[in-house]
Each structure stands twice: as C-alpha cells, then as structure tokens.
Image 1 (tube, rainbow, N blue to C red):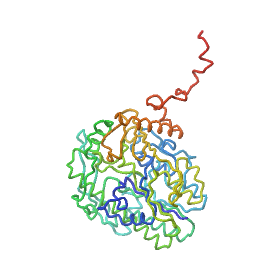
Image 2: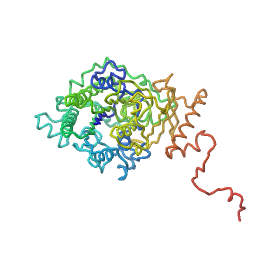
Image 3: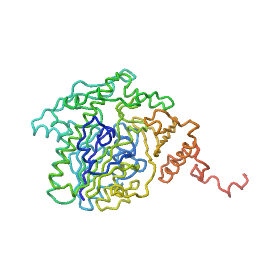
Image 4: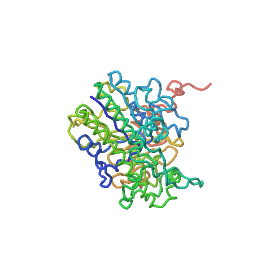
Length: 493
C-alpha cells in the first residue's frame, strides 16, 4: 500500500467546503472527503507546530517525546528527539518503502527530515524559506520573478512597536509561489516513485495557510470581505478567563486594528486556503494519471488551527479553544466506502494508521490508535473523550485539556481553570468552572483527567493531587518513604 500524506499548517477546519463553509472554494479537498472518511472530531495533541509534528513522527504525546516548543521561541526545552526514539519512517524503511517529504519539517534543529530517511529538499523553519537555494533554482529554471511583498498589514504592540506581519501582497504569479513550488517538487517525487515500482510514503507539508498570508493579488482579493461573517467569539471580554489570554490579544495587536481589517484578513486567509487546495488538486490529479489511485491511501490534515480574529486573537497560543485544537482530518483507503465519523480522534492516531497500512507493528506508537477500524466502517470500543496538552510558546505555560461530547475542562496551574458547555456555548465565551450548577460535571471531568494522566505517566497529575478535588489520594505524593507504618510507631530519641 502506497501512502500519500498531505498536511497544511495552522488550518481552520471551518474553511473547507466539506466541513460546511459555503463561501470558500476547496473542490479538491471536498472531492477527497467525498471519496474517503471525513472525521468530524479530529484534534491536534497540542496546538503548536514542532510538538504536534513530533507526535505524528513518533506516535507519542508531547510530554513523552519531550519536544515541547518551537525552537524559534524556545525557552529551554529540548530541541531534538532522543536518538533512540521510535519513528514511523524507520519502520517503513525496514519494509523497503521509498520515503519522501517535501515541505515543512520543523521537528528539531540538529536532525532534519533526511536524518529520518526522507528524501526531498531540506526546508527548515516555521514559514516559507523563500531564500532557499532549491526554490531559487526553481524560479530561475522557469524564468519566474523573485519573492517580493508590498502593502504589509501590521498592528501596534503595547510598547508602541510594529506588530507581527499578518498579511501582504505577493508580487509573483501563482506559478512562482512557494505552494506551487512544493506541489511541483512533490509531483516530481511521485513520478519517480511510480517508475520505481516499490511502495512509497510521500508527504507534502505546506507551510500555509499559516500567517503571514502572503498571496498574489488574484488570491489576496479572491473573496469579498463583505462575505465574511466575523467569528461570534470576537465578542470575547476575557471576563473570568486566564489573564494571559487578554495579554496575548494585545501581543497580536487585535484592538489596534479596525474590524474591517480583521474581516479582510479572514478573506485573505480564505484565499490562501484556496491556493493550497489547488496545489493539493495538482498532486491528486497526477496520482490518478499515474494509475496509483487504487494502490494509494491518502491522508489530509493539519498540525493545528488558527484564530484569525476568534477570541480577539491571531496565530495560536495558551488558550485551548476549538479554533486551534479541532483540525481537518480526511483518510481515503482504497476499497473503503465514503463516510463521516464522529469519534474523537487525533493527529497522533495517524501514526499507528500509517504503520498498519504499511504492514508494520503499530505498538511502538505508544499514544496512537489506528484509525483503520473506523475507516473500514467498524464500530470498535473507542474513547468517548479527548485529551490534549500545551507547554508554552514564547514562555512556559503548561495546560491540560479534557473534552467530551458536551463539555471541555482546561487546567491552568498558575491561573484560573476553565470549563465550557459546548452545547449551550459553542464559541466558548463563558467560563463555567466556578458555576455551582456544573459542580458535578467539574468533579467528574477533573477526576477523569487525573486518572488519564496517571495512566499515561504524565507527571502533570502531581499538581492535581494536592490542588483539586480528585478524592482521597492513594499514593505518597512526596514520592518518598519518609513515613511508613513501622517508622511512625517508633518514638523519637
């Protein structure tokens, strides 16, 4: 079984037609969803690039693989996986798979994709490396103009400095964009692998639609801002919320720009999504032309979502809202019927799925469950909740989240905890954690989260042992033997 893995970066699930957006043109991804399994509750294990991508590579939760932050904003965490860490490409290589990865790597600094057996241009960093020699050679070979932007969009930071770049006009034709270049290089590898005849795993990791949104005019102006309905959570007041959220809104300069700018930014983001969809379409079309459709399983997902003004925020960060934790997830396996599944599944579950499709043992992917039973239309015993974690971006900020079919609990050790009723408050505007009416829900979720963390071996649970109502402790939280039945009976000298 060949494996084609298509991944975007910072992609809102509600920008795809197959997930209910009537405005944004995503015909290629919609067609993929219509011929495969679309997961409606597909989540990232953590809404930050490097830890999420490391979880995909290893099948492990971030606390276990220990890559906890992007190196560009690192505050002392590890920057590379342990040398003996299990990774799925090593298992595939043992099965004589050809391994290719075109696009964003962002899993460590000292070891790149080639270190794990992938071929393809080495493209480091968090955003399109437009000065990369291979990209420059691509432009030169095709007599295409170099990268140049105009009309930058920025707000103003609390200290009066210019804010992060949010968008700009790209003075290049579509064929010169980094997204088009990535699809072209992926197609070249696809053709090479098809000619070889051995099974392959080929990943294309687009850097977009991550901000800043840098697009040619035809995509920058593709959607009328008047069509944009602002997120309901733009009414966020941060009342009863962790103060860091208000600070993060200021960091991303939201209130220094008129709402018309936010509306335009969302429209430009939509244009970016359509640009990426077109490049996905080029790859899928070539797959069909090469006669590989019936022998190739196709995945589409993202590393995490994006705020685009929701909760008066941009980018992602220390707020475990659906906007950045729920992501698109589509899996098409030849011979399986199209369907929509409602189980809670994770990006990390792709690892065991890849391994099983390749005939490898999925057990080493410790925190991953194969999605194949779901894709095959079965109804296995499946968890009715989802666990996620966060460790910081720009600064350490540990969080754990438990989400079930109706409620979400977020534990913030250095701040107020959060509890949302997603049935009555789908936009997560009202923190119900102190609400006496939801006391039983709070206690149930807190105890369930505590038990899950202990089962996993996530030491975050030690804080919960003493600070929250989790019932009587059944272990010595000092992790010592200072006290024992025998020693307590001995009188002091």
